[in-house]
Length: 187
Image (cartoon, rainbow, N blue to C red; front, side, top):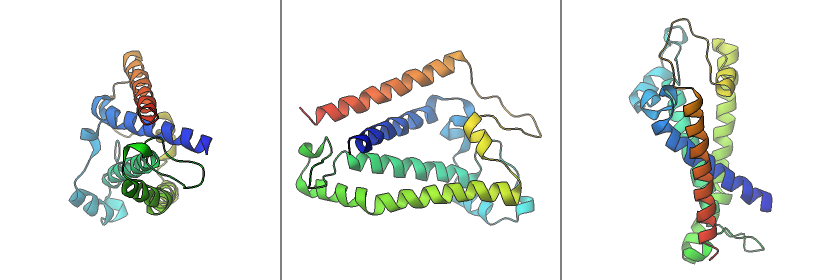
């Protein structure tokens, strides 16, 4: 459970970082560059494959996938802070809330939250595979490298030493904030 909790703290730090980076990061990392309306996502999902233009960044469904994954991971890590297995391990913030909230957080963390996360990961991996096999679009390489081969020139994303330093500082800030949050419940 010690490693489970450490991984949860790391995940919460990363989710917080990604949310911040969605506002101050490079152009293609910013939420404003890729968030779509539900109607746009619906239209994208139901248009014939041949008509679906390749997206420079996230397509409308991918944008909603990002939001769903961040939300689910954030809820899962956050609820873990307030969960109690009633055997030997409780989250570091359980003493700060009522038993009703601890029970609700535990039920979410061990039930629907866990299964929603599994479903999103399965859907995410399935989508990557489907895009590779059916559409012949490799999504994995751009996810891992941050670079995508395009037919037409696109707006450059801010990727230089200063932006990487900012990313590192923000990640350190998020990790320190999570550490302070965890310690605040143990005082």
